[in-house]
Amino acid sequence: MATQHDPSSTGEPMFHMPESAYERLLAVRDQLRLLATLIQPHTRAEESTLREVPPTPLAQGISLVAGQLDDVLESME
Image 1 (cartoon, helix red, strand yellow):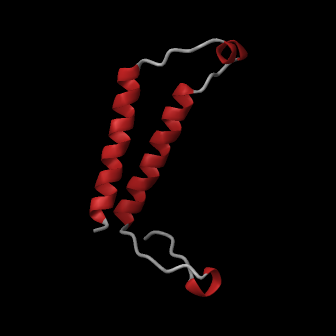
Image 2 (spheres, rainbow, N blue to C red):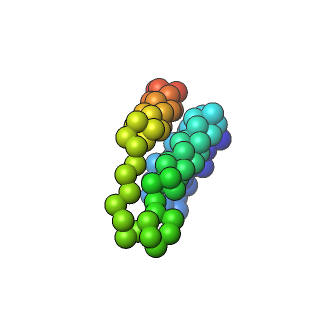
C-alpha cells in the first residue's frame, strides 16, 4: 500500500493507492532517472561540447514512461 498522509499532522487529505500502482510509479521514477543519466554529461569534456542525443531512443524512452504513467492513472480511477 502506498504511503498515506495523516490529516491530523499535515492537514492533507488521506488517499489510497493500489500497491501495484505505487510499484509502477517507482519504476517510472527509476526510468526517468535512467533517462536523465543518459543525457547528462559525464566528463568535463562532455560539459564543454555540444552533445547530440539521438532523438529516436530519447523519444522512445519518454513515450514508454508516458505510457506507464497512463497505466498508473487508469488503475486509480
